Length: 453
Image (cartoon, rainbow, N blue to C red):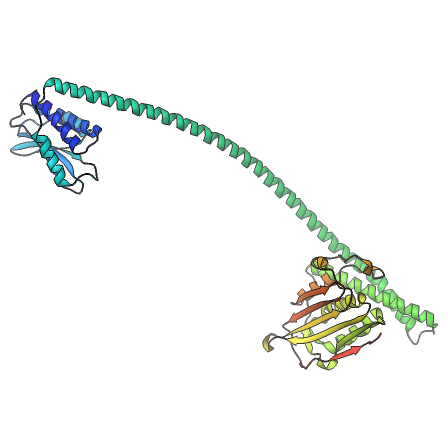
């Protein structure tokens, strides 16, 4: 290379080679511009030559080498300008100096032999160019660069507008979500405040109910005890003789007083249980005595001529370890309910020991042939103070505490209470008390007490 005409040819050759090897237009312009600037700077250097070759690395690359006799090195400004367009390396040695320009080829292109064939063909048919051709080529490149710049500017403007619209939408959505969140938070705070207030009211109501039950139980116990004591005193054989009518009336008074006393005791136990003050006092319990006592008490208060009250044979009843007071109250409530709502037929108490020897339990079953419970009422019979309404309530006063009270005491004893009933056919309640000592198991036999009472 010795003249400006050679620089024009170098630029043209670089553009054609880059195009034939598959480089994009921008990369073609960069390579041609960098080589023309480096070649123009090196004009006048001794034995200046330019060579094109392909580097067969992992990714093929076009390598252009400018080589000249050792002399003045290229200015740093020229090297820096070229390095902004392509990869440039300056290599001085003792005899020659060279500048190596490397441009990577796009991946996925033709194989290396095909690229070499294209390179040889392009360089072999390269025609000489004039300065006018060079200027026309530069003008075309400049026009192309300006068009690309304008297109990029328009694309950038469009993207900025879309971004601005997106930002406005995001801000509007954020504002809307913020308002909704504030509204939701206000609602949550109001709900929490309302729930706290309801909890406080329920807690106060529960405490008031417990205080009421405790106070009323204590207040009623004293006069009821007096009624029961005076009735027993009047009925005592050593007291002055009463007429038959008087003795019957006093007996009714004593029975009613005993019933009231038991009810007061139930209320007091419920209040203690809800307050966590009712404790289980476990001790050996002779079920023979317990069943006999229940039989005598219940037949005197609830006996009906057309109802047969059936209890187990005393010989088959074991001695167990439990709280006698609580167990008595459970069975008394279940049996009194059965007798109260059975006009004819049978009320039956069955006692059976079941379970393994290491985990024994006693199962008490109270069944009757009474009026039963409608299916749609079964879910509510364990609610406190709830009573199944109907003609059967006539003459059968109650508080609605019997079943809830019995289940609560059963659970205190560690057991379970289940109920099944058929309207018009009777009710069956099973109480299972676990972890009880079995004294003497025996086959169950049935004894009928109070037949045709």
